Length: 382
Image 1: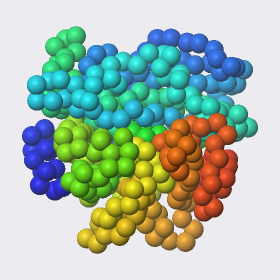
Image 2: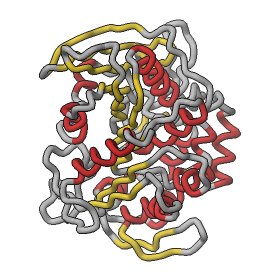
Image 3: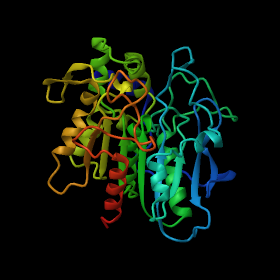
């Protein structure tokens, strides 16, 4: 991947420093509503455009009647939705979806009935922040030039990728507006990928999260290359692992976050990312080729036969398992059924499931309750 990455980075140039604070001075509230005893306010940040049209938005939720001046923890939901890029002819790939300003109703739809609902009901009094992914850049665009993107802002300026900066800005704004002691990043699918880069950047900024809950997907460039070079078949999700997608996505994210040496397992194993991580994956996840056996490529140059999804998560699993005794990071492999009754452990994202059940004896059956217990332990860390 190194020569490929060098080619991509040479073409697009460098982005801003990961540790630089994001811009919050232009944020304005644009909508409000009350749902099931919660007040939700939507904000727009004109400093950070989406890829095709509009700007990055976010929603802050507070329980009706709660004190706006009380110090409470914050739950940051980083939704999924894949990754995108622009072809040489300027056409949006794989579609134009998830590249324009998100509506209020769309964002409210990501206040899920699984883990997030448990957090909302928790006596600790969490507030909720739902962020946008309208750069379609796995939350890794750092005002980064966007190759082949023909779209411009109303003043004629190019639209960079802004997933990282917009997410940082939303967190900075929420924690400045409401007194916050700890905050957590809950990422699903593409949001799961994004949690690591966002956490690493915020850690460098001096605003580290209290923990990451990463559900379903993690950046593993060696795995993706193996899948497309060997034509692995196992699920519809395998079709996403193409060379065009790999080059296209890497070309529009911050170079530091696209560097293979900075993949999450390296950051964890080398002690460069110190934020506690709950690393969660479903063994037969259909979005990562299911459980079809492959010769899993490992970072030391060796291989071992693993199910495709387990292979994608193996480097990070090893990095977390290799941390010193007393580490606050944990692996949580599960087997949760999805919509295909003939395939085991096939659900893609599992934390959004209400009353989801795990049958892997290595992890608790009520995995969402176990995650909430881990979160409470992190609240007590300080």
